[in-house]
Image (cartoon, rainbow, N blue to C red; front, side, top):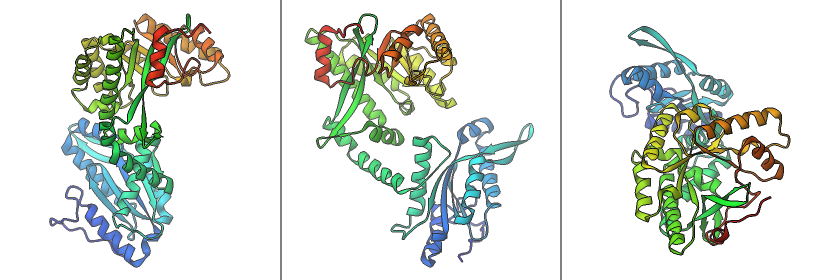
Length: 438
């Protein structure tokens, strides 16, 4: 059985200098010994990232944050056996080789969290640290030694960014999706340059008279004569940060289409364009959006920027500032998916937005209760009183339409009226704008 390297106080390129635990190089060395002896098949690798550590750093300061990291590693080390190995890959990311028989115990510890003591100006304080974990039960031959880090890190990303759960296993399907993500990123920028991405327009209709009152620009990707599902490429681009390039591209295409329709004598409607929360990392996002609209030479009232409310405190502050900027610039905004699980009434008070989009979850039922109607009616009433317009998305059935109409919402988006339409089909819809009252 491989033995853990003795802790050495000297500078060692295999050690993480803050925590004194092995860094990636030291971890791989230990794993390689297990691989050569065939013992690694008895292990699971757990790759984990601490939740909310940025907030802890901001609260206590970076020096105390470092001490918390050191203590966290020490506490975890107490839960490992002589045959197991703990590494620190930097900042708030760790990795561990745990015997398969002990995997569930250690995993539950990471998810549940551990208490770490820290000292502050006011005395001792306790911090609870839990993690998002990716797990790989080592199976078969390892083709690349770095797989022991790569595979569980893929599972951790899957848990954190796609499942939004505490942990995930590096199954064959998860690893296959990672390969697909790499392929998407490899061709993404070339596809942007070749304009493989197309904008489809889903109409918004006033149900009182059947008039077309707006549309949402939705991106579609046609590569080698095959359509790539948005469910495949949008999460990938969000995880990588490349989504910003796509969102700017879609806005540019929408502005170009509106300008052409105006020049052709058409009377275009306001089109909403989605921007990801990940785009908020661009501190000049609002200015760049305004620049794209101005460059196209179209009326700002013909563009509406849609964003989804965030639950992260730091992102929330940035999102509020972003919406304030757009408001000052005279650009319409909308909160998408309101009521999808994390939205609160504070959104109506804090965000300066033009439109509130009611999420389909409010109407995705076969049996509407009086409670459903009271809640939806009050939300719509408050939004209208605050000067917002309200639209319900995902309306597909007559009873859903009647329900939201009774609650006071008449702006409708969904298959009940129309599916997302390619450019040329939507252009035809613009000519008379009439769906007919249903």
